[in-house]
Image (tube, rainbow, N blue to C red):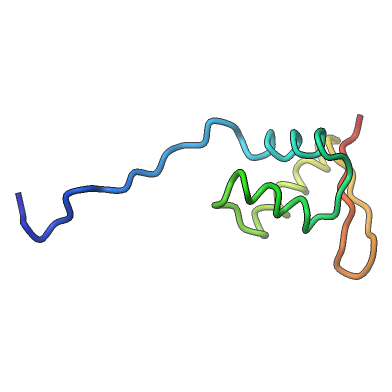
Length: 83
């Protein structure tokens, strides 16, 4: 064993739930919300998601008919769950 190598290795674990499931659960609990608020809530549960990935996730869910996005003001969107 090499004395210069660290003795512990940080292991990254897989998420047990997909990110889109977490997003839908947040919307079902809290109701419609602004995209920045939703990103902050999702980031608490899944800290490795960036805003670009978040936008791609929103686009996929909107195309699939699971959520609806509407423009509120410049650069802000309202995200709601489609029932």
